[in-house]
Image 1: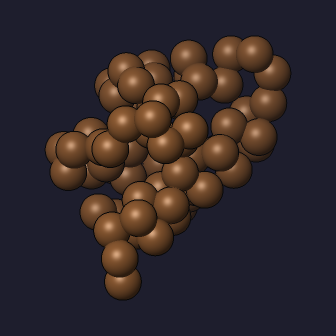
Image 2 (image 1 turned 30 degrees about the horizontal axis):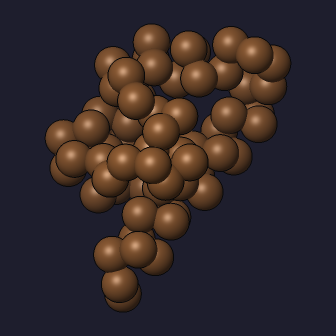
Length: 68
């Protein structure tokens, strides 16, 4: 699997999580729960996540975010 598809899975999962939370505070909630401060940029593909930040997201939302 190419890395772009792999990152795409995380982006898709983050966007689905954002829709579940809904409202304008969704990214803030995800940031607060995970400790990852650039989740919106990751979801929009503007930055590539580190393994550590991806792991933090997975730990915070194990049913929604795939492991790195």
